Image (cartoon, rainbow, N blue to C red; front, side, top):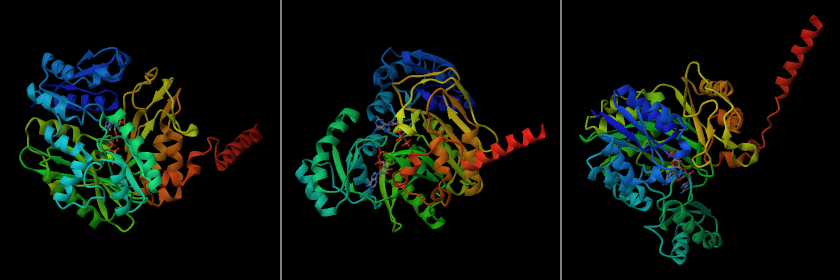
Length: 472
Ligand code: ADP
Ligand code: ADP
Ligand code: MG
């Protein structure tokens, strides 16, 4: 087993990995920028090292981090998500220094991190893929002719994109002409690569993804699916496991498809195969994420498998502890990404001091976060502050639990997406388990929700006050 792990990340995922290490008797090493001096992961780890005054550079410094891991006596690095987690050079640099990279092989990261290469690998493996360009696009003229062939609307995408960025829908040749350079320059800035490709835009699809786990002994299993269709601007807001919108036959088919995809590329460690489901019931491979995902929590909740612990065990060379038929599922879990954003002001980031915070609790509630009362949110990083995960046996009950937990949570001093999620939970279509990736945009009234007490609540308060006064 590993003895000491460097966590090349920050925030809630760093804390999550430290917790897994603590339970496994593994020493944890945290890193932090000057801006993160008072961050929770720094306090929770067994050891912490400052990696410079620049907010981002240290977290992205491949050789600096590998050297630090070696110098501090670590035998492995966990990259978390974001930052260097899908950087094949980082995985390679670890290997060169005999440090275990907790993730798949660098070649697999490289192949799957390139969305066009991933598409080609999947086509070769017989996995259905969204129709699109064969590889990257050479020119706007080529883009126009491919788009003409597959039909509008199309999605223009950055080949090495992620986090919902570097994607533009184009409904006409004119739009494609206008967006072509725009996506290229966005991609160059954000991902350091000018490669773009295009694929058919599936209108209002469901985003359904499958969690897979592979070991170094040839075993690959899946842990069922997550429904991440509640999105805003291609970014996930709420995730659900299992999907309340597919049936058991689709579930089995999709699980099998994901395992096939993972086998086709010799996948090891934890990964996610993302699919789109169109209104005719067809699934299309979209991309594979070669890392732990933000929403791994809900899969842990319904299956009881600790995914981060399993990642560490697999990286240490141990076989998976479960066979496919041993993976069971219980009820539903929903994750809410609590972002420091103002939903009433176009989701404008809202940074500053958290004046008071207390976590929601009680049965079926889990909170993953790195915030605390008095914490100053630095403006340099992701706006996700916390993940609230609720679970219950039925869809009706998990919604009620979500409402209760979000109301239970105390988070003051900044604006958050909590009131927005309460509106979504009240929406009849959400309650009826009927929503797709267009849900948030289709219902602008969700954005203009009112913070005022609802009339029935107000009426009951007035009645109570009146009653108290009559009693006097
Ligand atoms: P998930 O796929 O786990 O749901 P997200 O897409 O929300 O995760 O991304 C999680 C974090 O990782 C975000 O901070 C996002 O900006 C970052 N991220 C994801 N992919 C990339 C990428 N290719 N390049 C840079 N950052 C990325
Ligand atoms: P990222 O790497 O940023 O996660 P993805 O390729 O996974 O990018 O796409 C992110 C989201 O964009 C999807 O969940 C979906 O909502 C939307 N999307 C991507 N491709 C398509 C498509 N071909 N048709 C319709 N929606 C798409
Ligand atoms: Mg994706």
